Image 1 (cartoon, rainbow, N blue to C red):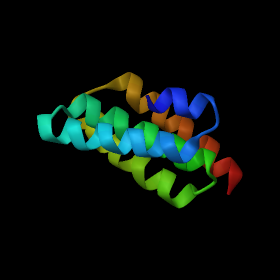
Image 2: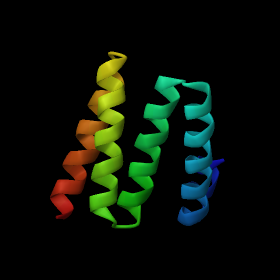
Image 3: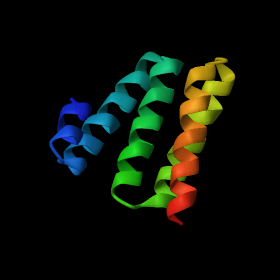
Length: 88
């Protein structure tokens, strides 16, 4: 649902959807989904130009990706962080 809201420019609704996904993933202790939620939330904050928040959520996602050895996620996060740093 967050993707749909994001695609139509409803970023605050996307953020709410991703935060709900994070809450559910944490209840289920699904590490991969927790990491993906953090990553998606970071992306939304970046789109909102709230770069400090974006970097915080990306950092949380990176910790999860490292814990579960999810190399693809780590690569995406490095790219996302690089894009944020260009904007700063």
